[in-house]
Length: 479
Image (cartoon, rainbow, N blue to C red; front, top):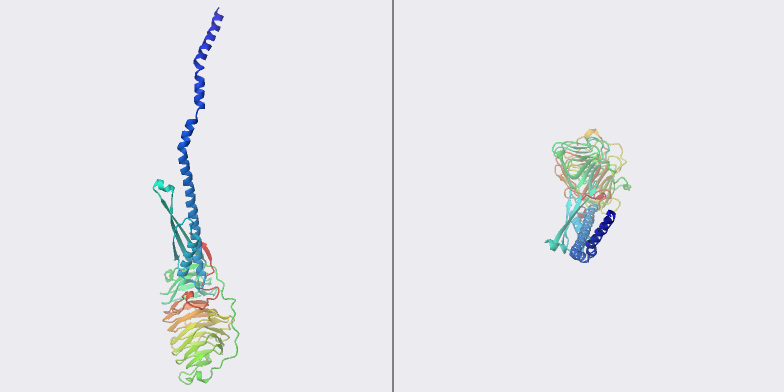
């Protein structure tokens, strides 16, 4: 009886449970299955947000793309600008114009934007900086109270290596291959100075001497206060190959005979000394190019004009003294044989420009590399006295000495591969030349000259020999 009641109790419980739970399951199931309305609401709320984010992403991508375009334009412009300094007719204005033109061409936009472009020359003509800015309209930015965005980019390109070489001392070992002392000045603010000497004092600046240049570089070292150089010299620079080493000199021809009338003061004191030049001029004459055997001596108020061409000084020097003057346009002097050299004494006036064409285009003074053993240098006849010995007692094959108080136009390249150039004038030298380049075994400045090495290549039709003057240095982006 108890077992029967237990089974009946189980059936009753199951019946009651089924009666109480059966109606609820379909309702809950239907509640879970019926989600259509909630999804639509969420989607409806998210669509504007998603569209806004997509539009913002597209607009941001456009801004990034435009900035990349402007940076590319700035890079191209700065490179184009600084490359102008590799050209003979380059100046700051040309570099800036080229950079601006390149930037305008590269930065054009189909959206009608107007970029603002600025270009500047830096580091004494060895770098060009370009800045480009543009205001970009933002459609989505208006919702955030930012209707526009300013984009600004900058690029700086520079020439690496020595640029605009205007002075090179070739001697590989001499102390003071480039030497200055007393109150000597060298001004080369548009070009660079270089010494190949590996000596610890390959460049010397003593006393109150001053050298100003784009850069000064020594293969060895330098001596003297660093304040004597602006900027101070760099040391340990790699020696530079002689840029004119392949240049060949002219072949001497038949000797020119000036005749008696070129020297009417032959017997006027002092008596002519043929050591200063066998061909002597003491009158007003016009000379022609050719070979002057025994050299050329202008003296006793000689007034000489040179016709264009090459003047070969064979077995003798070129000397000017005693209030003589020499004017030559598109002329070159070539020194060969024994007793070569040059002396522009204190009381002389000289104005010379190098040839604009021909085998010695751009070269004003050029000496034969196969020089014989040196002879004692000529003593100036105007009372200056002998030049100081070269630092370290080095003796050059020839001496080329400028003492003249009026040697302000020496336009062209002075190339003396085995000679010593001495400048101990009291007045400015070469400052009225469009450009002057000096390449010599040794370069010594004494007393108080102000030697000016200009680099205004574009203001003359006299070309600059390849390898000097305008640079062939590499172009590098630095910013």
